[in-house]
Length: 270
Length: 298
Image (cartoon, rainbow over all chains, first blue to last red; front, side):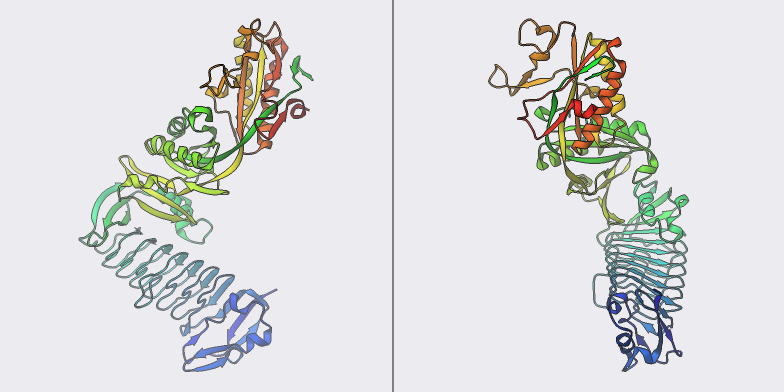
């Protein structure tokens, strides 16, 4: 069996909602049914076969050729794997419950927003509000793991509740703002206002942030026993955070945000 | 049946169902992991008066522990789930939480989940932090040497307690030497503990007593100094009897351990004063698990 592949016939002129193209919804469908799937393309509905050349038969493993206009990739998926070959638009991995979503390029806004499980891997950069709550909602990502090989935009993990976001590049402003819990690790630099109004949760920062808010208090340098365990939990994932050599960390612990509950922490790797 | 001059009695050990759990204690080094484990398993020889039976199962290499530090595996047994949960919590709180550099993890994933750090976390007085790692929940409790890391729950399964055998020898030192050899061999068997001091118990008991308040009393039939006073099970040359009690996660584990222990004791043989191997039973009325010595050694 070969992966079920959707290759764009021509570059997209409008935004395209590819949320029906996930293993959960494709499994058990005949090739004709898949070809006739109704997709939202701009302000009209269009059959999948009009936009894509469709090949392969393994609906557990789906591949879609990428475009910055490809929205909602992997939305709500709970099983199997979905590979976007190239960029994805907004809302990639939104409400995903399980399985594996990989974007070989970059993603737009709200990637992995309100993620409930599974693994999201973004090989390029991620836009703003990665793993956050949708506008008006108060629960961001609540489970799962997000790996970003490049940089991430502003407000990563806004209202994040649980799970891990691992950013191998830099992150923008308001990292982990209003976090309820969970872990965000950043290998590169981070912008201003990291941890703004975070109630609980952990920001693990390898490069010093631009400025730490006045509402974070220094608790000193420590070797924390849970960190090796946490990083061991990423074993088997293709990320620098799972490197066994990097597990014995010495960190400066900053408790905050004390303007709210104050049970969160920024751990600065020494 | 005779092995190396040692007579194996045609009898059986009688064991009963228990509930068991395993926890893993890690620390900066094995020395401190053992300190915590020894304290946790102290005064846990018999459920008759201790609340639980507990012991160190084995030492763990850093590669075998969740946090990559040296550790030990501890097994705890009790007659019921409630009692086991209570003993586990009390002992973890008083002996592991207090022990420098220690961390405490579940040693069993299967079975009913009972609290490990679930309630101990309140020691953190509101400063405790929860972390969910690879599907498991942990608690980080701030303590004076850093943080006490403890997994939320551990598994509890049905198990077997009270497996045993008796070593009958011509002298006290010879009986003890045989027991030591047996225990050394049995400690290599996984899933079992020998909960008495050094793994050996000299006070084998019978059910009941002439004193109404006592549920158990000395096993006079195997007391060498009472040979002339009671209906003895001992021949004239037997001067000392010692027992090894085994708790295991399954009856097969106990049988394996008994075989290893009896083999080691018989290894010393009649030449070293070891004369008989017997077992403690109550005529099959105590529990459903019967370990026939000759079957095990067959």
